[in-house]
Image 1 (tube, rainbow, N blue to C red):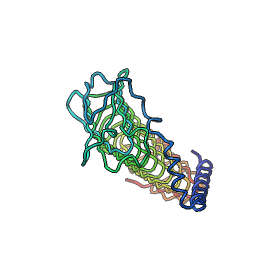
Image 2 (cartoon, helix red, strand yellow):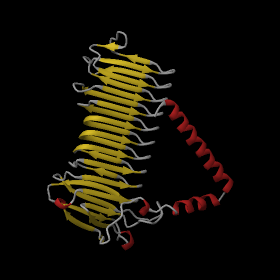
Image 3 (cartoon, one colour):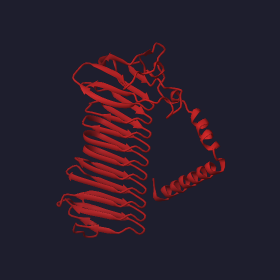
Image 4 (cartoon, rainbow, N blue to C red):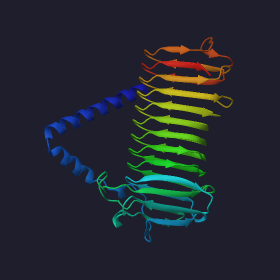
Length: 326
């Protein structure tokens, strides 16, 4: 998104928030009831994968991983933990400090090689589904190389080492953490939750949030990190292309290994951008700003340092740029 688009986006958000505030003040006690009625129209099963006709209901089950090419899970406020195993089955277990109500127990089934798992809370109101916490433990063989697609609305999602070719982890307000694993493609999406990715190897990584912070550490070829107001901290090894986009959040990226690095792009409105590179790095710098300052540790000649191999493009309105030597 370009600078003009971001400014427009924030203007629209501000107008909406002011409108909601005025509506709440004007509506008095009816505001809560109105909001509640609005939320009641949102059904979990409007956005989850549809279950097969022979779906089953249980607090725990296991399936032969050899029969599964894709694992799709949709939950509401359950916390989800993905655990790697050396077994040959995918096992899923629900647990709670109290007895799980029958209407809250998960549903599951297989259709065309896709294992679909759905919260038992489908069709009920977000945030008012129950007054107790359910935890979901998902045990996936390290040998599983299919697709993982797991989402929860307000629950916390944490994933250990998996080797799925493609992995998507998503929340609305819950935090996401991924520690370890090798993927062709890894994607994490949240609205307000924090995203932390560590010790991961992936050909492509995409991390998106609106107001949550993003922390990334690992070995990647392509990185695309996007946030609106959250800060981002990136420590990437072996990267070829790094693309970062924020409105007001701070950007801090470190590249210890620049052998394969071809391009760094950073786009911000008011957030500052910090880039750390090895002392011997060669790059060509393009810094487009309205009022942001520049602080550079490298010796430059006509915006070129050394052999100029790496293309660095930074675009801000008032955010400054700091280029530091490692």
